[in-house]
Length: 319
Ligand code: TUI
Image (cartoon, rainbow, N blue to C red; front, side):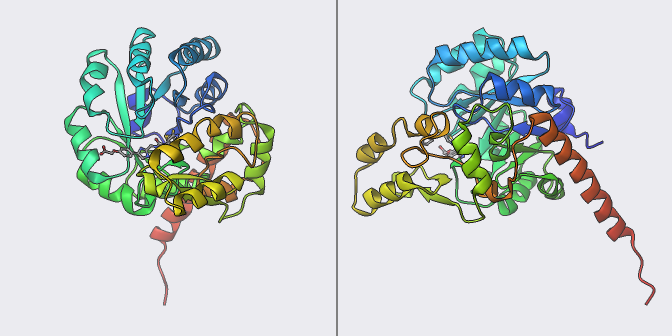
C-alpha cells in the first residue's frame, strides 16, 4: 500500500507531495492534491502576504486533510509570510530558494513541522542539526530555481548523510519515478510539473497545452550568471534572457528583465513573453486530468513496478 515514514509524519495517505509552485500552488491545486490523498502545498512565491492568507483560508474551506505552505526564501515578503503561516496555525512548512536556518527556531517553536528543500549534502546536514523534520532532495531536473546535482546522484547521497526522512524531487512524473525514488532510499516524492496539468491547477490553458506538446529537450536553464539558475520551457523570453546574459548584462538588469514574467506566463498564458518554469519531465505529460487521478495512477503504477522488480529479484535461473 506504499505507506512510508512521510505518510506517518504528515498524516497523509500516499507519499506524494505537491511542489510548492509560485502562483500555481494556490487553494485550488493544494486542496485537490490533499483531497486526493497527497500533501497539497500553497506556494507563497513572491506573492504579497494577503494573497497567502486568502489561499490558506480558502484551502481550509475546501479540505479537512493536511496541507502545507512553501516559503520562498528569496521573496521580499519572507518575514511577513512566516508570521502569516504562524498566525494562521499552519502545521507543515516547506522552504525553497535558500537556507532557512535563521527561521528554523521560530517555526519549530510554533509547533510547525519543517521540511526544507535542499540541493546539497552540506545544507541537508546543517538543517537536520537545526531541527528539520524531513528534507526534500531536489535535483536539477526540476523546474524553477535549481541546484547543480541530478536527482539520481543527489538523493542517495543525502539519504546516507541524514537520519530524518528524505523526499525526492526533480524529474519525477509517474509511478516509475516514484518506485525509483524509493529505490534510492527516499520515503516519498515531491512532484511539481505533472501537477501543472491537473484539472484543478490554475495554470493558463495555453501553458497546459504547451506542456503537453513539450518533448524531452523542451527546457533550458537561464540565469546561471546571476547565481540563481532557473529551468523553464524555451521560448522568446529565455532566448532574449540568454542574449542579455551573453552580452554581459548586470544582475540588476537581468532581474528587472525577469520581474513579473512568471505570472505573465503561467497565469496569463503569454507563451512567448512569460517565464514558463517547468521540469525536464514535461515531455512525459500527455493529458490534463484531476489531481486525484494523477496521484492514484502514480501509486498504482509504482506498486506494479515494485512487484515486478521483486519478481525479478526472486527469479532463479535453471541453466
Ligand atoms: O525554490 C525552488 N524552486 C523555485 S523558487 C522559484 S521563485 C523564483 N523566481 C524567480 C527567480 C528565481 C526564483 C522558482 N522555483 N526549489 C527549491 C530549491 N532550493 N532549489 C534549489 C534550492 C536551494 C538553493 C540554494 C536551496 C538552498 C540553497 O542554499 C544556498 C545556501 O545558502 O546554502
